[in-house]
Length: 371
Image (tube, rainbow, N blue to C red; front, side, top):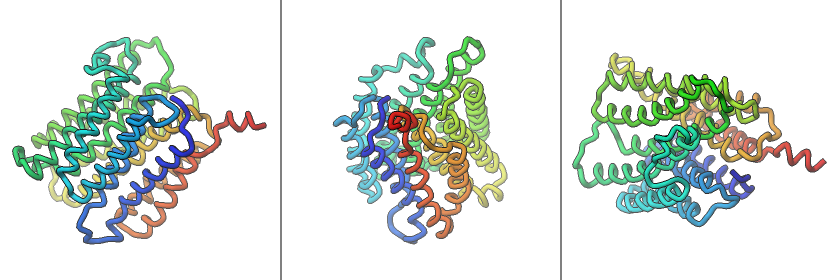
């Protein structure tokens, strides 16, 4: 992976900040016809996350024409769906899927045979899975839009279009797992050699099966799979604590995995409360809000930050202070900003500062070279 240039850092900083802002605009424009949350999700997961995924896959020191095409078309996709121009969104979504497939096939192959080979690293498997998940997700989202708005072939009572849109966070999560496993030390320990491929299949198949159980409202199985995913995430965190290389990146990835563990706990809690309807109705929206926020701006952000600065590490910053700042912002202030204006106004500049410091802190080797 080559170093990201300043202009691209500024571009991603801008899209991620604007996405964050859209998450609060419902407070300032109550009753607005269109849903700001869709732009919030698209700009962060698809436009920023998807573009970084393709850029990371090509491993060039610039964004190629095909990656630029994805970035610009995904922006158009986000805006068109925000204004409920569904036919245009369906078409562009399919074009985006073709772009992702071109990048994926060039980097890997059409059929993911590498998923089944023990000799292939778990990091590469997660990387390939992230690309495949993104292209499949774009196709499924186009079908879901057509079905809900026009076809009405299937009735998804438990899922809204926003649920399908949130699915764009999964490719970002998978590439974050890829970076996590990429920074693990080699080991001859048989247990850890088994654990890597096991967690790869557990996480990928677990999420797919979980999605199906949600559609068919199989509550007991939802609880089982959500608990199973919690165990899988716990195993990854344990493995990373033991085998993660003692570099600056480890602090950020460990923090991100800790956010993901909280996300898994919130998911289990959310499903468990469905057995108690009164309690569930009282807190379901709050739990979902925290669940999404911790996943997007806790776990996924940690992974994207490491990808964007991968070749720059170590960088000149105090990672412990940055991580504490991250938890205070995303764990405490920002969730309140969804409901109240004051914490929203506080969260936005703090989030920008956090990203700016993270993206633009000087690499240590540059400081040494300048002396």
